Length: 163
Image (cartoon, rainbow, N blue to C red):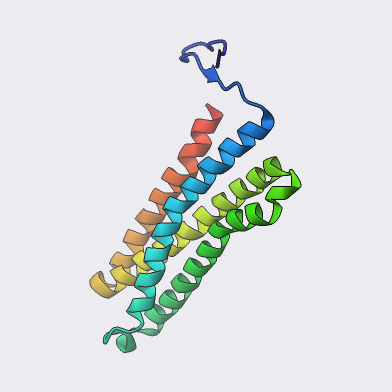
């Protein structure tokens, strides 16, 4: 590893001594590991939503709650598909020598998948809070959780990337 010049008020950074192919390999492994963690949460949410439809209280849901349920279930399906796309890209293209392209596309799909995951999780919050606390509280809480996801998953990385 090489020590890179220090910028003012910044600790010295260590540059990796790796080829572009090695960097692509490392980045893909890291990305796929991150997606494994997130995909487990998506699977748990999907299983929960499937189970909800078979509860005795499900037929008593209001039209708004049923709509929220269906949209949330479909968002979870889309989330799962989008977050699994990097695996499909790797499987379909790994032997073609385009790993840097696979990594770049996969990173974009991961970001899109996080948007859909945030929407799905907030849909679940909206549905459950509407059932437990009522519509006004549900909207307030879902607004707060939406803001939390926006800040932690999107604004924070963007702000840190600029600095």
